[in-house]
Image (spheres, helix red, strand yellow):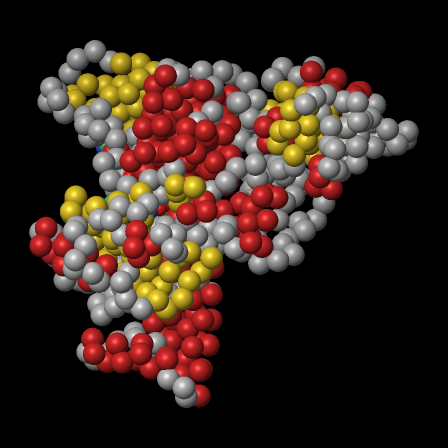
Length: 590
Ligand code: FDA
């Protein structure tokens, strides 16, 4: 055993959760070390759908442009196609990932960012490079083995896989971002609900020029309904675009009770041939690996000074593309809290809000992703294809939909309906953006006494903005001089922000008097920021002289309408007391 290495935060894992935790902490000036088991970052595409909320996080962390530059853009993502093979019959399409014109408008109204397709082997280097440039110390081939904790910190034992010896890292906090088989979560004894190993899946990464079958219906996902496609897996066979239109990843199921098949190149090529359906196209298989569909979530994300994020605490299939998105958002939720506790601004109690806010989200996305698999079955049912006796029978059932009979017309309608219902997987804007942290769950949110407005439309499909405490700050385009920017561009960077308008001077003075750093944003005619379209006035849900206190992660923590008890206008001392009391609660001092 050699010298003990010291840091403020030790992060285990360099996947989306660990890399973004490191990036946020380094951006906020918190010393941190990442240890990661392997000699490189992700070497396969894995997660890819990157939603607007994650892009907002990346925008705040200063890497949005780099991600956009490398990602496949939104307009090439959205014709999710159901077919018998890429070269075979097409059964229908779903406009996806914000590419339905009506949904596209909703995306534009909801956020300054756009969805994109950023495969994990490209995303991780962007996050890690920026983190290291800002101060993260990264150790490849260093494997977390165990930890102990006491009142002042955590001591982790780590094996240097290059040298073969072990050493200790002493940190004030430990983040377990070590993925779906998290040893940190197990060692911390985090209680888990649900089930691992629900179904078996194989990923096959390959190269082939498939533009002939894809460029005219550009998409990230092509679903194949073919014999064997309902065995295990994620609902059907999947050909996923990694880079248009020559890098691909197939997901194909296997019977988990029988164990994974022998993943020879010949086997992988046979699956590719079946799903592509054109033997004349040259194919190069790059890798194949087996994994299982899980339906598991942690009830608590922390034990003492140990916090877990990402797949360590929510394990689910790739449906809805929620894996790395949720992992990055977990890390973003945790990082500012650690920073404020470490620099003495907040009481460690603030960290309790991490589980309170993120565990319900984790549970929700695990449920959603698994439900999406089950919702593929009606597509097969519409073709009488759930358990045909022979492949010939399946093809005959599929062909029957072309008949000029009443039964075939009914079948066509059923198929259209089943495919259209898949918007819950491929266009679920609300799942991406409607996260709310209720004040009765999280002490880092101050209730304002208003009733929960609920959702006017389906909360999974449609985003609904709100400035009520616990909601993400609404996006509106505002101006500052000749510059047009989003309200979301005025917040973040590790600080609280207070937004007010004309008549809100008392709030500005109150914010400036606080010990914790609060940026102030005054929006109105003749003010530093103006609202030429009136969008902000429509979305803010408070009068001009009201105030919103926004946390560093973009969630509204406190809201006040701005009227004083007697004068109708808020006095400086009233605003000062209201803001101080709110911050005492948010920062865990109350
Ligand atoms: P992630 O698993 O990415 O990272 C864990 C990190 O911890 C790694 O860096 C690992 O080396 C490190 N680590 C583990 N144990 C360690 C130890 N003891 N010591 C040190 N380091 C340790 N999702 C999706 O949305 N679409 C998809 O198509 C896919 N496909 C897919 C394929 C495969 C093969 C996998 C493994 C996963 C997917 N996923 C996916 C899931 C998606 O990749 C996943 O949700 C995110 O990567 C989760 O990010 P995390 O950072 O939490 O874990």
